[in-house]
Image 1 (cartoon, rainbow, N blue to C red):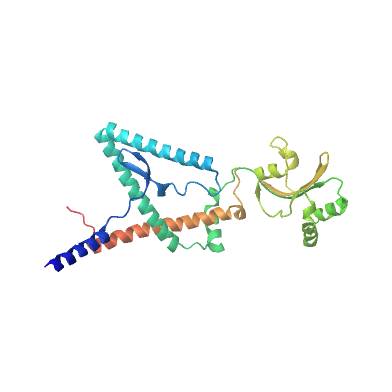
Image 2 (cartoon, one colour):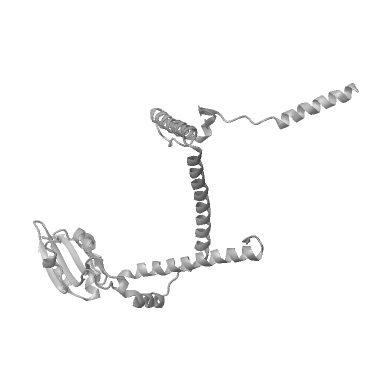
Length: 282
């Protein structure tokens, strides 16, 4: 009997050691019944931060944490039950919206076809072009900004005036010698970009320097700009297809996403009715 008791006590001792509670994490601050633990602030301080700055960062975080807890506790005590229920309902609805939005976005990301054929883009543009009008001036141009006394200025100017691909290639090969440049005059750009690249042009003098089929050189004290304007499109004109192509592509993809979302919503509701997970009581 004595041996049995000793064996039982030994077993209890082992059991107590096995089921003993884990050590609680070390708390660094308390506000009423809320605790801030060391593990929550361990990653606040970037590596290499001085001791003084580290203490300041941690102290600031703890103060903010305490202030938020104190304000929240005060709000719970002082806001009426009706107001608290109103906020609780907003929190519940926000959680629902957050979860469903994330779920739908994930489904759409997996399912939506993001490849839009040129034929579809062109058809969409032709059917809706009246809705795509310019909000400002668009320009096709090319330019070079270089030193006025560049030793090969005459040759550069001659090649710049040419439309031969070989001449543009030759200019591209020495482009590092230019202060700035743009050789592609087949691409539409917004007038605001022109103001930034060619600062001698302003809204007040724009008509002097920006007109279709215009070529000129503009000198200042040390530099010169060679400019060739191919085409200008004014405000409220139908936007060129190539200019709004990215916008058209995004509109079509967004339309596909919208249709997918409607389909997901219908499918999940139909399945719930079929499986008797959703019923309306009359």
